[in-house]
Image 1 (cartoon, rainbow, N blue to C red):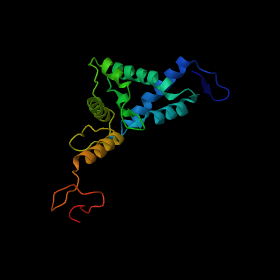
Image 2: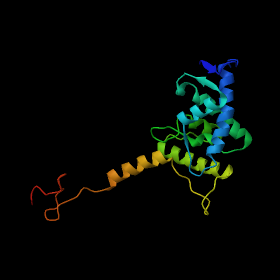
Image 3: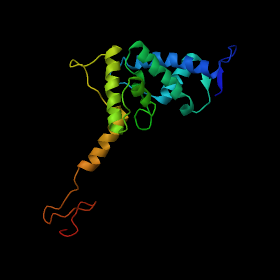
Image 4: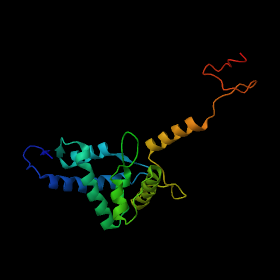
Length: 185
């Protein structure tokens, strides 16, 4: 992995860069956890930690962010903090990534293969983060919530499958898209 820094600064090794990014990621994620139901995408986190550290890379995000977040998982566990990496979601679908398995492993929990079950586990972890890092919560203490983009995806799927097609009131046949029964007119 090639890393660059601003003019006049020594170029860090890849390991030094990852360690610096992990330290900064911890701070960024703790800040995210201070806002109830907040999440951050992998891309947003990567941009923020590179900007804050002044250490940049042109390597593909998927080639380095996992090792950075793995360090964050272990540091949170060492400190007794909830898993901050549950706050990091993919931009296109709002789900935690495959690296979430490390959270489970470090906590001594079995892997979760079911996607919805994994997302619900992450939602519970996020709620623990919000509580631990001082987010302003509703009076009842807050509820775990799927990331907004993932919840919207589920809601769209649910409305597509739950809404029965319209039927003609006379012959009880499904109406075509025009809304006018082909049989009864």
